[in-house]
Image (cartoon, rainbow, N blue to C red; front, side):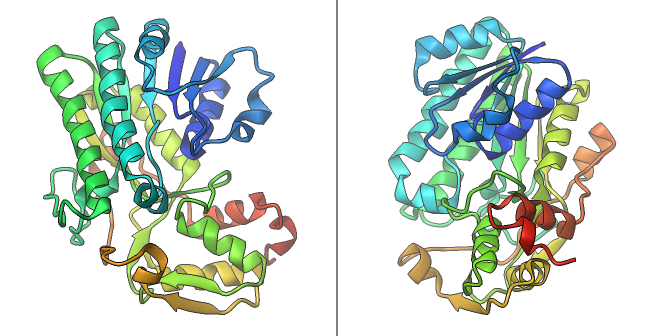
Amino acid sequence: MKALVTGGAGFIGSHLVERLLEAGHEVQVVDNLSTGARRNLAHLEEDHRLQVTVESILDQAYMDEAIKQADLVFHLAAAVGVEWVLQHPLGSLETNLRGTDIVLAAADRHKRPVLIASTSEVYGKNDGGPLREDDDRILGSGQVTRWLYATAKAADEALALAYWQEHQLPTIVLRFFNTIGPRQTGRYGMVVPRLVGQALANEPLTVYGDGKQTRCFTYVRDVVKSVMSLAECGSAWGQVFNIGRDQEITIDDLARRIVELTGSCSAIIHVPYQDAYGPGFEDMRRRVPDVSKLRRCIGYAPDTDLDEALRQVIASHPAGVAGIAS
């Protein structure tokens, strides 16, 4: 098989590319490197089955030809990270809306199946749960950038499902929850690599808000395993799937685990949301996925223990090997 991976130089994308090559497939990566990095694929680039093109998914002519040559499309190119989205609202909307429209239209012309990455952000301020794929979305004001992003990703999902319904184009929506692992950067607001970097430098760990908000963290290789299994599950087409580990932890407890695992002497301090993101920022208290639908389809749901995932993040950090507590 020849797979096309948009955003393949990004965090999740590079791990997917790695696994596709391990499985014997040819892979073409398209990435504009706005948030991805060529170094994420450096260890793979001698593989003759990998082709990497630095290009934007907004280039309609290029994407049409790239998708025509592929057997299967993994559309992961998107704006990532709360911080990046808040700083680049227009670019985020353009990539997520117009980019996905271009990908799906080309896939439809050439009848190529598409797995499209979405996000738990589409649930908005719904902090009930565990959240099922058909649960209500609760969004704040349209003048709040975070909810513009959530709306755009929900529109991506709707477009993918509409192509399935009206044109029978095989599509699967991958609704990722917080994913962690090697190669993830803290530059765009990702909490785990940011806290790990602070702990390894023995700097204060900055927890935003009161630290009592809970999240679920999923090891990236479990995410990739789920994605590839869904591509092989005939009943998955035309469906939406939560992809995440359903064990929640407060951000305060997460910070304490990182301090312990790194052997750091860092203190934990709380920073008001408005100091971190500016006035008007809104967050949710809880975000937990219901992954029963995923488990029914592929017989599996992410299960790597959080401490093990954190150890891998720590070990992959430039200062991490010597910092792991025995």
